[in-house]
Image (cartoon, rainbow, N blue to C red; front, side, top):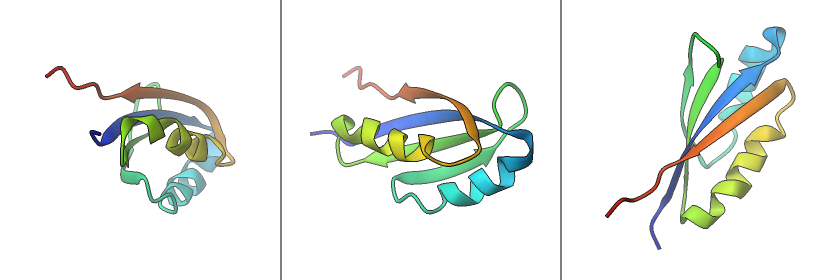
Length: 79
């Protein structure tokens, strides 16, 4: 199976952005974390052994206190 890759766009409570950022570092599937300006506060890259495990990794992200909304974009292989 191919490795699963997804990007999670995260909105946070205003006073929780730094706490969420640091909590994300404790999730092994989170490979990159970016604080961004715009409609979302943080974008993370999630990698799993296969695409079927993306959902469980995203659920770990969603459980972090201070997150108010997420949007997940799963990478698809066109070949």
